[in-house]
Amino acid sequence: MSDRELSGKVALVTGATGGIGAAIARTLGAAGAAVAVVGRRADLGTAVADELDNGLFVPADLTRRESHDEVLGAVLDRFGGLDILVNNAAAYTSGLTHESSEEEFDRVVGLNYKATYFLTQAMLPHLLRGAGGRIVNISSIGTTRSWAGSSIYNSSKAALDNLTRTWAIEYGPEGLRVNGVNPGIVQDGPMSFPVQAAVDIDAHILPTIPARRLATAADVAAATLFLAGPAADYLTESPSPWTAA
Ligand SMILES: NC(=O)c1ccc[n+]([C@@H]2O[C@H](COP(=O)([O-])OP(=O)(O)OC[C@H]3O[C@@H](n4cnc5c(N)ncnc54)[C@H](OP(=O)(O)O)[C@@H]3O)[C@@H](O)[C@H]2O)c1
Image (cartoon, rainbow, N blue to C red; front, side, top):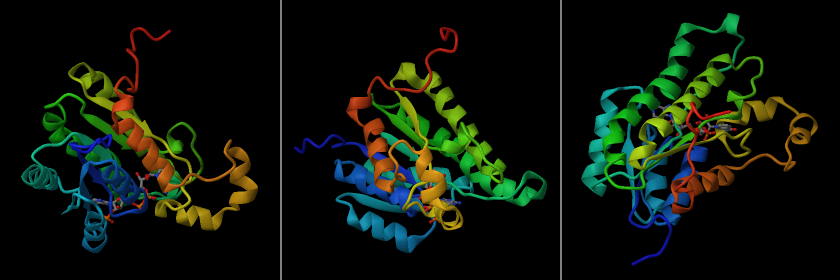
């Protein structure tokens, strides 16, 4: 019997066909978890799943409500349960508010907020089945700080942060731990490649970062592993709103 920290656990990582999600899937897999790799791009998803000791690619467009039960069914068929849900899939859009379209709003909010909400709703009965269920929401630094041109994306991630706190309170008594990771610019995270190309990172960004370097997908994956693992059993967002000073 392996003694890796996630041995015997089943994890589902959305957006695991992308840069950060693939790193999270590899890291959770290396820690012993069986991992469902979820995304639309079959070539990338299959490649990531094939790298893992016990990986399964589950193709899904998560903006389709029906896909949530389809994903759950595939995970239960192969692994028999679910312990860890990493909500990482997201879309980005840029543009000042007066220029933004309803189509872009629906595309980004429909994935980052609505699809995450209902996918999680579908998974909750299984996450609550055994002790030690975990949800890790991959959010953004843009929820506590904002910048021009990111109103749709940043507010969608702020909604996600609120879900993190609400779910932590709603399901903490049943043993579920819910936490978020809020990265700044991730060097090898494709979503920020346009920003990295447009901004002088050395001059304007690095001086604002205490570590004086950009985050990497491996940094985000390491934080996710910690939050998904046994060492974080008492760690959860949000103390009671009624006891906060
Ligand atoms: N990169 C950064 O600097 C940075 C900073 C802060 C936070 N983040 C957050 O980190 C996460 C990953 O970012 P990333 O840089 O790795 O971006 P990415 O490579 O673009 O990954 C996004 C993922 O979302 C999936 N996705 C998009 N639409 C989907 C849909 N309709 N259904 C299912 N999956 C869908 C994509 O997979 P398919 O295309 O295969 O469907 C892809 O795997 C996101 O939550 C992002 O907000 C990133």
